[in-house]
Image 1 (cartoon, rainbow, N blue to C red):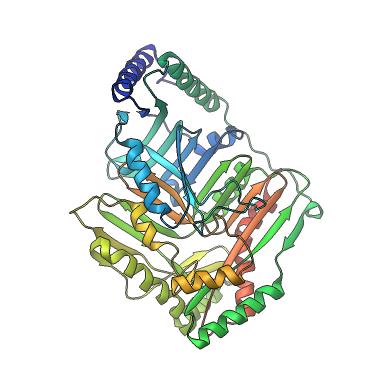
Image 2: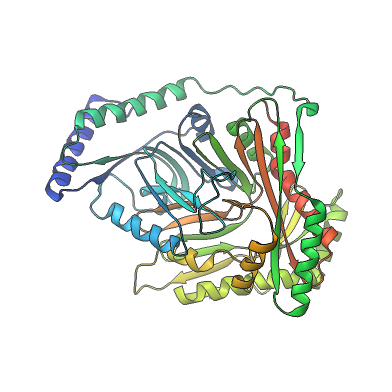
Length: 479
């Protein structure tokens, strides 16, 4: 790679020496970051090659924006009801005296922390599938590759991060960074060759949560709605898939990328587990002063012909039950965003978002946040999550009802996943259509919104349809 020149390494060494001196003067550990432009490459190849590392992958529709993060220079891990605010404060402290070299000004060109938040704010049970995925975890990677398109064109960047204090050996830090770059260059010289092996479905074993319990809980939810205790609640269920060979996270991502090009494809791997998915729903993006939210609520299957598709869309748009479910979500998001915005644009009517096997009512909400004070995306997320699209309405009563009746631990399913930078800008999606992989097992979740007029059997079918996103990617993969 052209960045591995003696002149480049000498400059990097000088910057490290300067950062060490700064840390010594401040008598504290600080973050050092260095960024350079790079040539285009397939980030999924890099993710696949780092299978034994902590890693994060994300790719937006059309591949207009993508990133892959490897290793950990620093992490923020918190829990409790103030986890979003605590994480935001920790980020500010992390970068307060950081030494950042050659970074750009656009949101994606800044130092990025990758990670996610669980649906609930408390730690997972010790025996849970989710014990390795805390209530909130954001990681500043050692190596970060980003790709994004803007009015300036396409920009690809490589960033290296490390923690440094007054006693650090800059030679050792430089050597570790150099080894990172050498490893990256080797991956680019020998791109991964994927082959699709046959998979015997007889070797697949599925264990779904009780359908009878789901139907019973849905009936109980409808009773609460009829009595006025709830307006909406999103009831989820789970499915475990087992195979005689370990699942390959990179291959699952490849299948999701091919089959769901209009979704945000993501993966977070740590401690031998990979949480990944193809989610169609953007919870919140903030760049500069502009924010965007793209809620989904209200669903119907896809047709087998274009004519049947259009007929199902017409019924979806005319359905009082589905429109009511969508309106509940829009109202809650509007109320959460209004205190932060000088202007907020909400479309008067939803449109249709088509995905393989399913289509949704969809709206795009735009806003401009106040100029008077610094506002972080994490502050807004603290008020926004969970929306009625994944929790319910009223929020407090719905969450209490779920804790008593859902009988599963959601973990990071239906929580925010994405990135935030040192200035509080970021982009988070809702973790839907997901699987948690560990060895030979995959743990899946899906939910459906219960409102007045819901039919429990139809909501059960919807959960099965949604779980097909992840399960089809698992069953197609080369093992």
